[in-house]
Amino acid sequence: MDDGDPGFRATIIDGVVHLAGDVEGVHVVAVTDALFQALGASDGRVVIDLSGVTFCDSSGLSCLLRLRMRSNGRQVVLRDPPPAVTRLLALGGVEELFDIERTGRQGTPA
Image 1 (cartoon, helix red, strand yellow):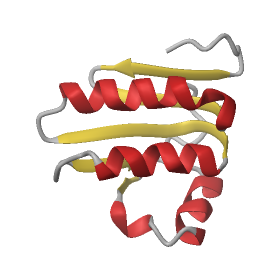
Image 2: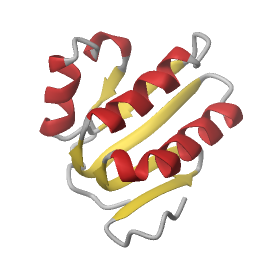
Image 3: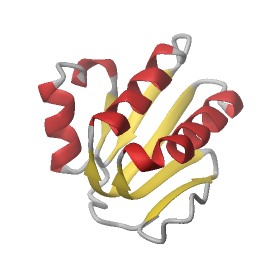
């Protein structure tokens, strides 16, 4: 999903949502579109690769929470969240709502 910002990307590759750059308010539409497109195509779990995320604010967290709320019991996996995202999840007290998967690919662009 291209929102015109060359420093941000939301793509879906083989059913995995790859987010890269700053996940913040100005990108909410692109993030939400990618997440819900993947949810609609999912039959068991939704995987969001966060290895390329450099920043995430409360708007980005809100997108993830909306996805989780509408997942209807499907597993929501956050793959390789950077420390800033992990901190944001902990501060919000919502880390338990997501499955965290670590592959060691931190900083890999989408």
